[in-house]
Image (cartoon, rainbow, N blue to C red; front, top):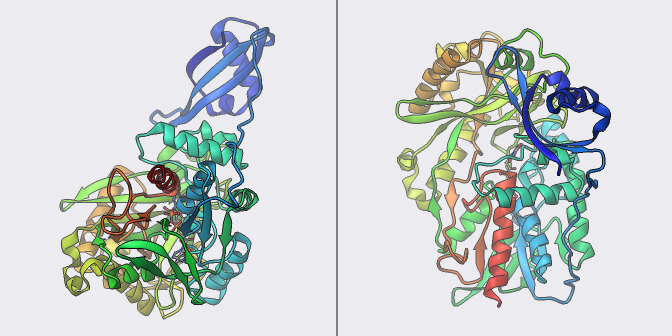
Length: 519
Ligand code: FAD
């Protein structure tokens, strides 16, 4: 029987197979030659002590013990070319994993995506970064793979159901992701690796008889007696089916407006909003690892921080070590920031959303918009940022201490945000209560993380697409919309996920419930 062991070792030992074998051989009192194979089951960093340690859970196979290298295989998919059709709107993680699950269940997905395939998207990302041109159908949020394609690809979630999370991670590995994601406590894929995986998922959907249509924006839902009959695209084409998974993400404002106009029940939902802060990665390493130099065996340090300020949570969101701040607007006339990292997280800067939780009462000035009040609040801040920074994709920016002191920064150094920045007093971008909380919150952060509150850190505004400002209510058991039969609100846009993994899990769940309803 292989021996399972929990141990703490130096980062150097954890990174070197032969050193690890030597270490283990001493621990279990055998010679290194007697160890046939070591499988790492879990890996995490313990940075609480001055000398940083790696926590490992390993399985040691001695010579003679049966051991076989296992390769994760894809599920057995069936050809669904002639099966019952299900429309899936949106090719983000929710839509793509719904489509795969439908095929596994013998149903035919027709995936409709307003944006381009992952390769086609790249040109439009360049245009936002370099020419300040925002394509309303193809950008950092819209297009194949959805909002997370050009991201840090963090793959952890607060979901308590480990089984669901493991299934999605294993599928990603079977589609080509490194199997390290099954082992790391905080796995991530990276912008350079995700697109190929997404392409392979699409190829699989098509290979087994599903359809994937790009440049296909859904503009209407066909209903009869409160039951789905199909959809209409921007060209007026109709596609008929009586099961529809709506997985359009948190930025599909036209979809929220459509539902509202058609009197399909939606609700305003609180979300969080703030800024994206950028420090040098070296500074974050020195704070997190209590060292001057990280060394070659530790990864660029992440951070996670939360404080209560005036009764509200202010916290780091979607932190990208060794990453870059990206222009994530989905319409001309607005500025939105978010972040991404390459798989090695080897950029010199660290960025994170720093956001404050909003309450429904904050949307009161927009009450006339009803269920869209939160969305209009969000839009107004993004548009203000655009005006203040010069009506391009430049982001309003301020040095961190200057912000806490209400002082316009004399200059803003070059940051990783390619479209550039304009020095403004951030207080002008946000309602007074929000700026006040953030000013106080950054001072609190500085007390917990010594060195974090520095004028070398640059704030960019706004970080506004943290989660959906709208919920599309559904029956918790059947996952069908409360009023409309055959409509399955899904993923982050509908208010049932936050991040790549939870969106993928929700996509699978909706597919399962559709199959269940057809039994
Ligand atoms: P989305 O991914 O938003 O997908 C919705 C899709 O629907 C889009 O492709 C869109 O084009 C399409 N669509 C919208 N309207 C229509 C329509 N009318 N017709 C047809 N198609 C339509 N999450 C993480 O877990 N880890 C990270 O590291 C991470 N980093 C991020 C970095 C960036 C820059 C961004 C923008 C997001 C990041 N996220 C990250 C969040 C993550 O991407 C989302 O939580 C996740 O993608 C939500 O999945 P979804 O399928 O519900 O929606």
